[in-house]
Length: 185
Image 1: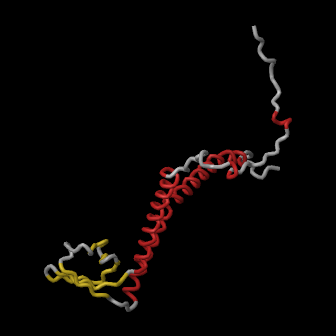
Image 2: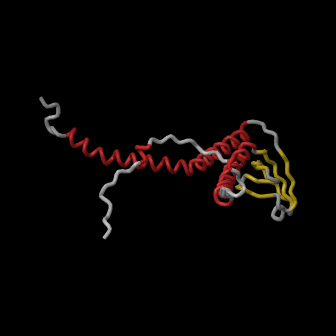
């Protein structure tokens, strides 16, 4: 008795059509794995940075936070001052979220909050780059620049040499001939 009288071969047809879809899923999952392996840290970095910024905005709006007042004379020509985003600045290698900005001629007063979470994210990203550069430099120096020095046989006495002991049966070293030797004419 057929359970599906209209389409008796439906399950066979569905199984045959599912194979190309499974291959595509497998290919895309392997591709995603390789891309995450090479670019995954940056994706996680951007996600963590977004979450840290959102958390900082919420803490500024909801909680009383300790504010820092920075007075910078002529910030366009100050080498320690950099504006990273509209509401974020970097001053003397420290990140700040700006709550309010007041301009007096060439002087600017920033009322801001020290952003230690995002600073930690950036230091972690810099550490990853430094470690990659150090690893590449190490590989280059050790494997390319300093190859193993050749052993000078003239300076070594026979007592300094250590020969390994091999136990090989004689039968295994004899190679049978495949054809008779050539004849001399």
